[in-house]
Amino acid sequence: MNATAVESIEPVAAKPAATNPLRLVCRSMREKRSLVQVGTACFGGPQPVVIAGPCSVESYEQTRLAADAVKAAGAGVLRGGAFKPRTSPYDFQGLGVEGLEILARIRHETGLPVVSEVMSTDDIDIVAGHVDMLQVGARNMQNFALLRRLSKCDRPILLKRGPASTVKEWLLAAEYLLAGGNDQVVLCERGVRSYDPELRNTFDLAGMALARQLTHLPVIADPSHATGRRDLIRSMSRAALAAGADGLMIEIHPQPSAALSDADQALDLASFSLVMDDAAAISAL
Ligand code: PEP
Ligand code: MN
Image (cartoon, rainbow, N blue to C red; front, side, top):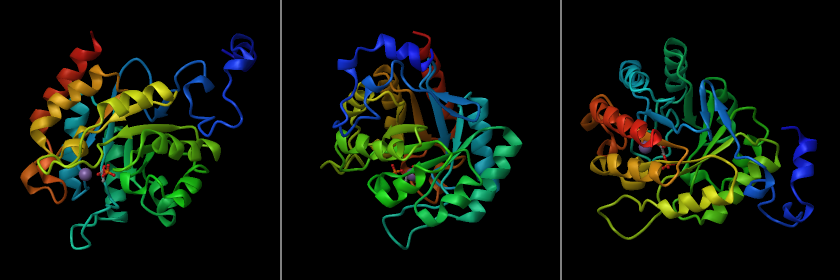
């Protein structure tokens, strides 16, 4: 539908006020929910898109095995961290540019679109040169210098929710991207800080559903970081999809116990295919 037709359908009173801080991301801004195309995958359409891959790119072999499982199971996008935000400076920090090169090679070999995190404005060009979508990690959700620069980038952005951010703060971070000119944004709920040490985070399913009501942008869920436990990934994936998530982001590893980061939440490749079976069954409902 062209812009003139939208004008005539939408009453002037329903338009977002110029004073609304969420004026570009709010649901009433667009007649339809937004679609975000990432290579062959389309977020926000009728089919949920699953992003899967290792927390960190550790080697070509490890990432390629994961990518083959992603493709075989029918997931849409490969993930893999090259620049890793680690709580301890002594933990594995990622392979950096070598990790990006591995991702670019596997992207070329498999045809899978790839998402990877960018932590610094200094790295935007190199990350964008190797992958299809740039991830803003939870810890950087309110890194406004990074958001401003990414708003001028021609790549889609996966914006994770900060571990202590309200839904409104998360949407305002997305507003920075749209205000600067980049409306190719997918939001990702990944759990918020709570009090139970048995769970890495608390999966805020209601916050995800609320965000999806408030914005036209696609909203996906990351049950891996939201729980920190591989035994909860399958049930929380089902819950997220049943609650309307536009997709999932799941960490997988060919040998989970040997993963250099987030080993406790990594699914083995066979378990991942069960999550994909569930996703297909729920989409068919
Ligand atoms: C990740 O996706 O590997 C990651 C570090 O996630 P988050 O920023 O949500 O902690
Ligand atoms: Mn991780």
